[in-house]
Amino acid sequence: MRFNEKELVSLSRQPSERAAELGMRGPKKGDVVKKRLVKLIVNFLFYFRTDEEEPLGALLLEQCRVEREDDLAFSIAFLDEAERKYLFECDTQEQCIDWIDSIIKASYEFMRKNLIFYRTEIHRLTGKDPLEQYGISDETRFQVNSGLPPLPAPPT
Amino acid sequence: MKIHGKILNHYLSCSSSVDKEGYLYKKGEVNTSYQKRWCILQGNLLFYKDRASEASDVLGVIVLEGCSVQLCESEEKFAFSLVFSEPGLRTYKFAAEDQASLEGWIKALLLANHGYLALLVKDLQQQYLEATRAAGEDPADPQGDNMAHAQSQGPVSGSVFYTSNPPAPEPRDPTRDPTRDPAGAPRPQQLLQVAPAAPSKAACKRSPKLWPKRNALVAPVNGPAPPQGEWSEPTDNFRQMHEEYGREVKELVADWSRRKQEVVSVEGDLIDLG
Image (cartoon, rainbow over the protein chains, first blue to last red):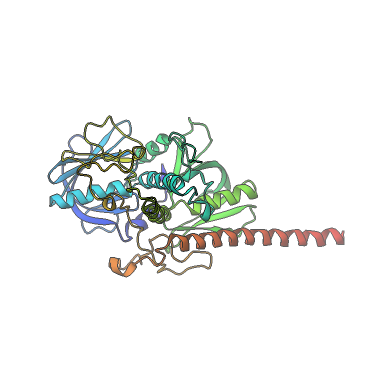
């Protein structure tokens, strides 16, 4: 798959939501834990060899499962047919918890779900659609019933 | 750099509905003619394929972070481009089939970036908290069923979810009575935190068409990234950012209309002379 590599590399140099040196192990049998600089930027997890300018890779944090593996480690499993699981080792429990939290919240789909919830609830509570004032109430990406059960009719 | 295309493909195939799809003409990089591509916008990713059919493979993807949408100076009608602002980065040129398609795509692409959604959610969260306060209700956690205990049946709606060994917060179904406060539930404020929009500042040279404060992500490439503190979001306010977007869209459309009129008036003269 072609992708805009230079632009993605440029993205990887931007201020991150969270960045740290973690132990990282890939999903393949025989992969071992290696020290990597891991950076969370928007919904991508970039990983670098320490002191290298260009990332080794970028993981899109969508359609994945984040699991606490033990006190200091968490994993990200990508739910494609191969279910590839990456392991990350942290220095402290707190760091581990913080990473899990940040990764979950970085997902575009996570934010979208929040938006749909707030939109629905605000409509229920106030009778108004909060997106109307911004002129984006018809945009497909903000639709309340994209893949979800339809909204109940607002109270009369 | 490895992009892990399978993960991207999987994201696309999992989506029950896409944000936008349709044919666009895309200007190639090597072969500089415009080629018709079936384009699919999902989240902050623009995928493109040869044809609309499911069987047709994804040819490529453009990550829509750090770019602006601009009208194109082009012989092609209904042309627009995705401009990545950093030096050395590409401009992707597209053409739509008609005016309506052009406007629809421009608007959709403008709204696609992560930072926009983050700010919008933050804004709605505020409105939600005010509304629950006014109604005398307890705010609920939108992701209540996402932070489920390990016994959950599997992936729930929402793209990333968390299964844990340590006990998770009590799940909260938004359709349940929100006034019920389960024992041990963390304070709603904590659960309702969403990732703050990445600090944004246009440190790069800007064309008039780029908007000033979008998207984060313009640190000087060769220098160290400035400390987080410096980059406090000037457009903390979604309303403000949205107005800027609205203005930009209007300008783009007005610009296009103006050019169209210029063409028409030239043609008019020719017809008179004939």
